[in-house]
Amino acid sequence: MTRKERMLAAMRRRPVDRVPFSAYNLFPYAGSGHAEDPTYAPLLSKIEQCAGAFAKISVLPPAHGLIRQRPGLLDRRIEGVGDARVRRTILHTPEGDLTETMSMPEGKPARLVKPFITSDADIECILSLPYDPPEVDIMRAREFHVSAGDRAVMGIAFAEPMSAVAGLFDFDDFRERCMTDLPAVQRMEDWAFERCSEDLRRIVAACHGLDCVLHTDGPEICTPPAMSPSLFGRLVTPYLSKLTEIIHGGGLLCGIHCHGRVREIFPEILKTGADLLEPIEPPDQGDIKLAELMQQAEGRIGLMGYLQDQDLYTAPPGRMTRKVEEIARVVNGRTGYILSPTGTPFERPCPEIYARNYLEWLDAADRIFNG
Image (cartoon, rainbow, N blue to C red; front, side):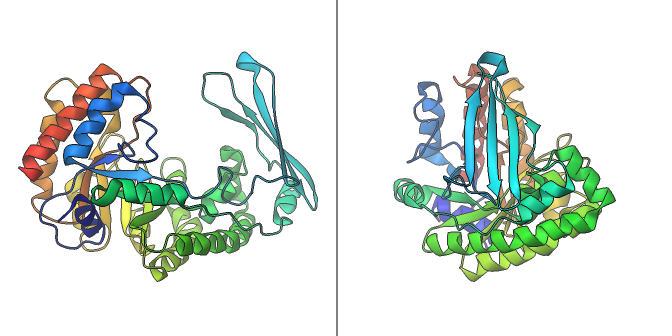
């Protein structure tokens, strides 16, 4: 089997000739954001030699989801400099203008200061927006498809209603509304579902013939301790199940991106019919061990991850090898699992400890699974 065939077979819970292992959004093929940094060159070379890759490729403009970034709908402007730098976005709706303010200090993470929705009246403004079809552009996806050949699988994002709606609020306000006025939240989700499902149909049609997984990252915000597990069954499962049917109807795979604790929501994840859950995290970041999760998942959903990304930045020599050996003993020839880190490398330049540990886990996986 090729690396791509092996990864896709594991996602489909079909037999594999060996356990697949994969880099997570770190790849040496077309569209790589790390190829321009020479400090990542040894890692990219090793991945090309022996590992699969899971690469997230976008086919929609940056402002995808429910609101399109086009003239006449959105106006954006940057104000201030240094730590006082902010971005204001004005959304023109039939019921009036809404404003979102982001703090964007130079060289530091952005932070939401004011969301679009702060009142019931703002909700009505959002609901007055007509549907605005997205422009799906698969040029980058096709370039990656050709460049990576049989060595990697693409992940292409789609929006689902719960996170699309939550993103219009301050998150604490959204959680409070879920507890005090759930019907209003579900009304917004019903409105959002019509748009998300039509967006998804267009993505599925454009991606026909590509070996890819359509994935959503929304469900991870509806997990403990941020939100009650019972809300997952109300706000995520019914909608995501229908979106999964659209994806399967187009002959593609559906993935759920969800960091953190999944033990209490895993039964709901299984109900969605999705093919892949990634990136599963070991305790203490996660709350369920691999052996137990594989037992529950067997034949029902593929799993990817369990090599904690944070460990790559701090672990002493030898620890990553032991981690891979422990995982190999648990997997023990079964299918439905892909070994990978739980996150995308984000530091520039690549830290020396990270590079050492990344090469160590790749060497260990190559020896154990390919040897």
